[in-house]
Image (spheres, rainbow over the protein chains, first blue to last red):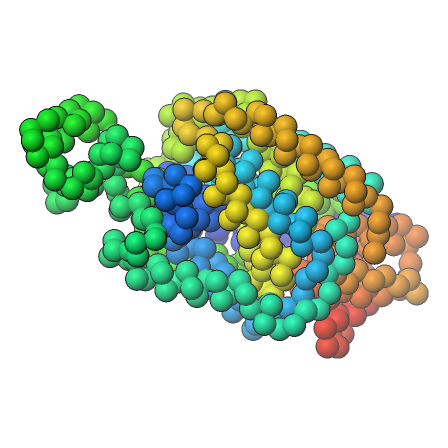
Length: 416
Length: 68
């Protein structure tokens, strides 16, 4: 084979797409999203899961329909329709794709972010993301060995048109609930983290800003007296010092609905057109010596870094990073599992969503697996917190590794 | 002419198969793909390898032809 051009024009296009996505993600933080969480596919689907199932899955702090998700899906659908790339298809081992999506989400929530957010975090100066990125590289290298063994989930085939519209339809349903709950009201079954709400004592005392001061959302008859939360009978439920030290819950930090929605739409269009993928860059660079997608993630880090610096959000270091922990081995191991699951799916969670928006039922199934995984991970108490991993993290990651190994083994060298 | 069918395959298999096919340095190659992503990736890959590429879309399928 004659020598191949290493960096073609498409590399710069994907790089530009990454730059744009990173910039938008950092800008969303300035508009109210949680720190270094302008874009996180795992976190955002987790929050959506919390809205619908939070009362069973213990997700009061992370329950909100993230409009970015709705926007990404609808933006990608429009881009796919305009370019005639919308094609209902699927049937490539859907059950295993559900399991892989489930494992991806569970391991991402041990790291505290998906493979996209790992790069977004780095663009905010969060150096603990480096552990995650080391994990991504290891996971991808293992995944490449599996791909080389002939691993294959089988070919997707054309499917009935209505199946291709399932993810877009889900986005519309989510949009209806998001608009209905935009003013803070919700149906009885739903869970909604109050905007900028702070859980002084989780599940018992919750406050939210009102004007210059605070109002008590829970318990109903308590009030704020000199900064402390005091019950109707005069008992001090939380002293002023404790109230002042409490930080907003992640689910309560958000940009305005319309801003999140339009940012998502733009990201959806750009991601669909560019095929941006948060794990494909490292994979393709090693496996087929193609660097286009690597330009994408590098562009994302640069775009996020610049915009974070402009808005004074850039905070370089390992300590006190937003929604992150500095358990080195835990961060590495969790992202090894997540990246391996993503390679075995054929792309990162953003790609799975974009594929689902192009009519790919297999992508939709991976997303459903992620939703189930989010609910399970919080119900089971596996999700990490900024304090670090839970006791269940290591045994759970080991189980996930075994399951991935079994899937890799049974699907090896069976080329369709 | 070398001919490949990458229809229905997940990433990165279309590129893996294309890269393998190019090892023999064929003067002409035809790749059958059915997703926009596979099409875009294969086209860019062939162009980077010095092929002039034409794409013929018929129904569900993209016929990607590389010549040099």
